Length: 217
Image 1 (cartoon, helix red, strand yellow):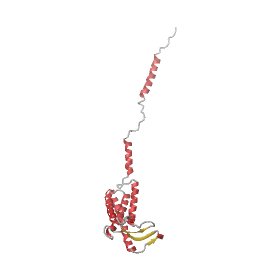
Image 2 (cartoon, one colour; image 1 turned 180 degrees about the vertical axis):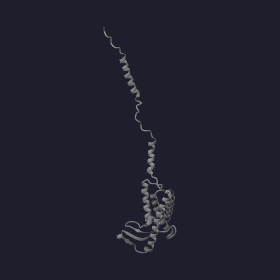
Image 3 (cartoon, helix red, strand yellow; image 1 turned 90 degrees about the vertical axis):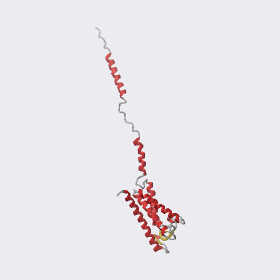
Image 4 (cartoon, helix red, strand yellow; image 1 turned 120 degrees about the vertical axis):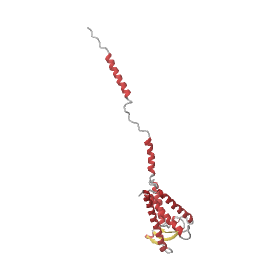
């Protein structure tokens, strides 16, 4: 199996898992918590309450439901287009979380009251000093954090790393640069050595030509 289908399979599996968890949890929450008192767990650290959100994740931007619906559609399309070049398992998990979370909230906006494209998202998880959210919001946040970490490490969607490309560029000048100067082979010193030898030979010949003193009878 080629790397590309395997990575897309990871994306689809993660997206379906996140989407299924979000849909099932919302069905349970609507059937058990709607119009009822909140359920407090862990000494009030975790509260389960059913609320409807017309804005983005964590109740941000309420009143702009159509805008966020169109943005969610754009995010889904962008992720699907990016998946064509997906060859990284970590990025597959990241994009799968983003896709599953975006589709989970998009389904609420398209199908729930008060109207298509204006549907309110079901939120049900509340922590102290934190807006109410759902599992789709959690998947989006986890996917976003993972994307930042992967980008910081230089890992790209196609599985390559930015630092690998940079190191190759840095090494290129070294490969094409001028070689280090080689140690002298001694040929350049030959004239000096030869001149010394010639001078020594000349002195020897001069000494040989000096006539010996004549003996007196």
